[in-house]
Amino acid sequence: MLQAQKKPVHIYMEANPNPNSLKFVVNFMLTDEGVSFDYPDEKSTENSQLAKELFNFAAVERVFIASNFVTVTKNDGVEWPEVQDFIRDHIRQYLESGKPAIDVVLDKDPLFDENDSEVVKKIKGILDEYIRPAVEQDGGAIIFHSFQDGVVKVLLQGACSGCPSSTVTLKAGIENLLTRMLPDDVKTVEAEGV
Image (cartoon, rainbow, N blue to C red):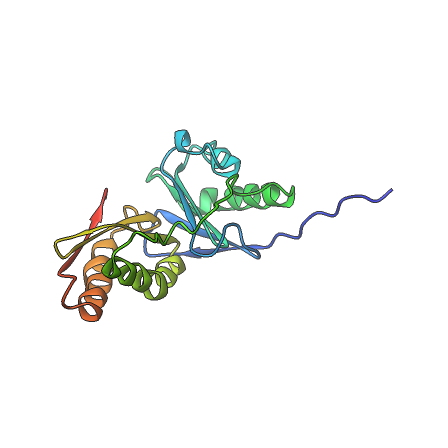
């Protein structure tokens, strides 16, 4: 009789600008490209058993899952060297068992909506092409929220949520790029729910 082979899971850890967040990078995709899931507390984990289990660690305050990584944000009462190996090992064991990181199937691209105005389509395209990869590199995500009267509102998730550098990223990076690329439309960029 054949035995099921364990999926080889390799994880390395990356620091990011948020000292309370650590990015656990996996050797395969956990979600579709450009799709992310933010869990600010255990109550929000209904579609991720992995996120739910990570909240069993007393130090864990937030879990974020995107493409090929899990970003965990810890509380201030503990240092990363005290908990990082336990969290990494738990993620590895969970994924080696073959269980999915996310228990949801998307039937359409959550980024684009055919009812969006041309300006909103351009804003979302710029965010997706230029901003998302850089923000994901730092263990977070940026999601379009709204656009009205020249103001673009975005949601910052993962390591970006509560990061000391997020205001600089928002104003110096994202706002600069959008106002330069769409000068007739975009005047300012604000973070929603920060």
